[in-house]
Amino acid sequence: MTYDDVLRESIKDIPGSSFGIAGFLTRTVNIVTFLAFSISFVMFAYSFIQFTTSAGDEKAVGKSKKTMTWTAVGMIAAFLLQAFKIILLKLLGFEEGLFL
Image (cartoon, rainbow, N blue to C red; front, side, top):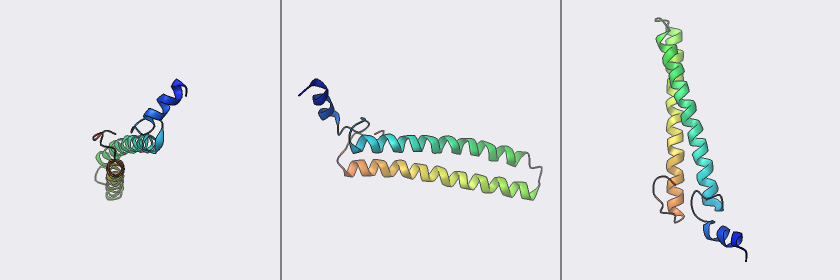
C-alpha cells in the first residue's frame, strides 16, 4: 500500500474532504448556498433601488415588492438547504460542528 492510498483511506469520510459522500455533499451544498445568498443580496439591492426610484408608481412599487418577496423566499430556501445538510451529516454520524 502506497502513502497516497493510506492518506486517501484515512480521510475518505471526513466532512469537507474531497473523498466520500460527506465531502461531496458538503462541498456541493456550500457552493449552492453561497451562490444563492450572493444572488439574493444582489436582487435585494436591485429591488430596493427599484422601490426608491418608483416615485409612487403603483405598478413599479408592486413589481419591487414582488421581487423582494421572492428574494426572501430564495434566501429562506438556501438557509433550509444548509440546515438540511447539517442535519443529514449529523444523522450519518459526523459531529464536526456547524461549519461542516
